[in-house]
Length: 271
Ligand code: ATR
Image (cartoon, rainbow, N blue to C red; front, top):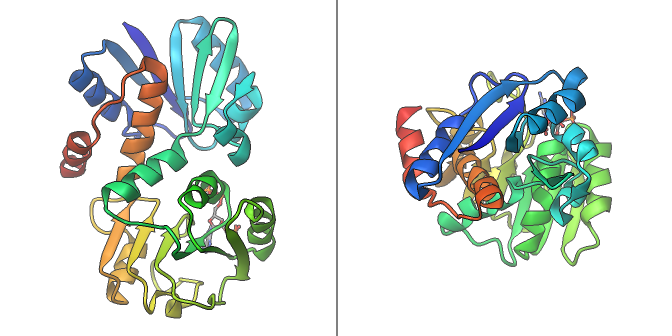
């Protein structure tokens, strides 16, 4: 049996053990997968101990992704671009790191028949989650990506970092709106958008076809509720991204690509 785990803090409510068990069932690979709480203070020693104790791969979640980036001996190109990794594995004496969040988002966007090619997009937020998806978004060839963030400098730094890859990336202040027709808005902020504390300009939603909220909940997320109220037809949440990033990790570890649709529907109906 191959041993895997997700590490983070807090970790109790992680859906990853459930998702990976379903992948294992579907693919016939014999695995165990646990959720293990790891304090950032003990990250390095705990992670090394887990690999010593026979774990072959680890998923890494908040707040440990940057620490995992620092620990890995070899980092994938995507991990290097995003400065954070969510997937670790050991091969011989080396620890490898990759970031599958962006791939997970892309797969889910494609599964929902959304095309980003030559479209103008807005990404709300400029923290770790935003950074983890921008390279993948750019790879789909949008016409322009506008980053809006409460702290302008963080958006501006990301625009500088990712603005030289053949796609225009601009940073604006939180209450500004870009010129041109916005096709879709991706929310990466951790802001609870309740009680009217939405700091971005509602005019953003005027002609938008779809929204994607990286967070998820049983009901529509507060961000997607707002989008629906403002007339947006397609409002997706991050559960599909979660299942698809897990599938990418599973494939790295086992060499087998699991089917995600059935698992996504099963998880959705049990939230
Ligand atoms: P994550 O890894 O989830 O992205 P993070 O790096 O702490 O976490 O970034 C959180 C993001 O949510 C940031 O874009 C943050 O804006 P600031 O850069 O100005 O801090 C955004 N955010 C958090 N609380 C917010 C709020 N109440 N309103 C708007 N944006 C908020």
